[in-house]
Length: 408
Image 1 (spheres, rainbow, N blue to C red):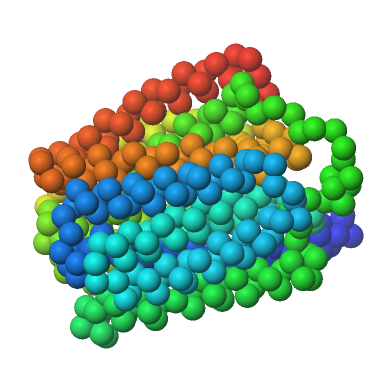
Image 2 (cartoon, rainbow, N blue to C red):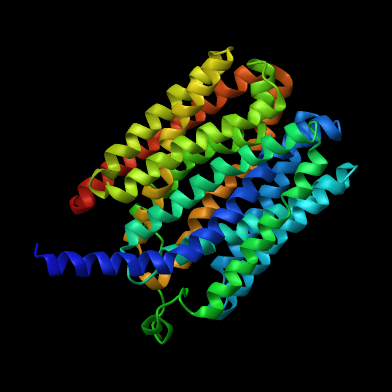
């Protein structure tokens, strides 16, 4: 390649990254705040409000139902020009959920804060993913992977910040939550500036005048494979986020502030994996990597159930970060490859609706299992569910390979 062509390519990449940067900032601020809220929810209910794990699971399940309903709202016939407003509303509701939880002293306040968190998560994640898949000046796979890098980086930073606040404030969850309120407000402010600048849009101008209906998503094997792959990620992830602190304190005997650092470890590994995917995209190995992730996830969860030392905890959590780092960029890339551009928003909403069902079902099930049999048995239950999904993934990828060899 000539020097002129290399220079031109680099310029195009820089332009694309420039367009992506504000979106990555919005994503990072939102996801750091959302994750801090999610990881604080169970210990806050358990330690401050003295709620049982079964009730905590039920409240998280209700939040998941609200998240699914918000996802379904995006699959309805909402006019495209209204989507930016929905995103800004969702980002603002994150800060409101922090405020409500920090001042709550009853189950009612705890529940209301979870509902606002569910609305925020249900609106923001599909819309941010859609934006990342529709940028000009940067390849779709690279932009989507960069989006997931922002997710992992923010998730690694959020719990570390909260851990530091807890140490400084003597373990006060109320103070920590109030100090995290600006995350949602700042992300909403950046999002507003993005839409006012016109640099990032949900649709290209050529798409906005397209009159023909978007094609159906029914029977789409790539979308089905993406959903199964993300469920393999989501089943352990929702349990880890909801009950991770309690598992670390009970089975591994670490303090609450130290327990928060398991999330930093987990997401730091995920962050490094996703940076590598930006540099070296692995779309040609998608099917093999999905199978690898399923196996590694099951093995790591079983190891987490059997361990009891602090050093083992951090090693196992780091291993769990590997499939988490791989699965999300691989699955959203599958969605973008498998649908018409006009269907991308609907397809992303379908993906997040499907994986949000785990947020509806699993917290209450895991909470009940923990309440009756303990944390180790609950982890074995999660491993069995993940293994079943791995079998489904294997059969779906085999069918897709036979029907569309070019996707392998």
